Length: 161
Image 1: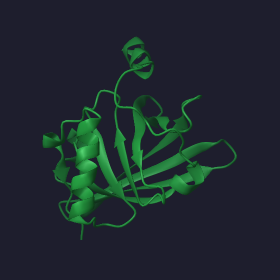
Image 2: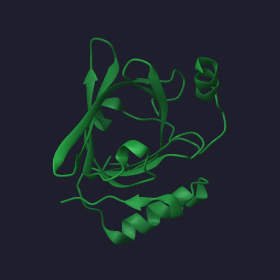
Image 3: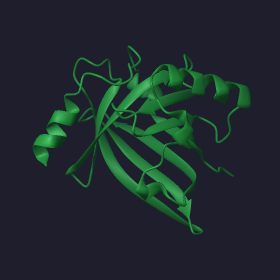
Image 4: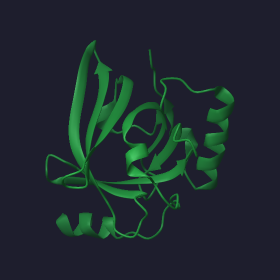
């Protein structure tokens, strides 16, 4: 199993990433506008991610949360940039043993929105600094995702409010 995870992190293919992510600018709160959801996200609304830079270790502390069945559910993780990726590729670790690839494949110049994917496109998120996104911008971002080989038909809009 660990060999499989290791090989996964060495993947070269997949959607191209942005050339550079300023981690300090990227930190803060991001609202999920849409996602290719995993099992753990089923039934979630008001989904958001909060990123904080731990300056002592260089790691990004992650807190993902949502509302499910009227209650808040959350999970914590740490993210470490992949060397040589301009901070656009991160390895996110949950429970100290479960690792996942987090690739920033699109990013607004002002860091108002981000497109994030797993290398193979099996997971994808459209993120915004605000809980809502203009429909025209959302459609433009879907076009960008399609150009990167992401199956946007699998995206599910996230209820915010």
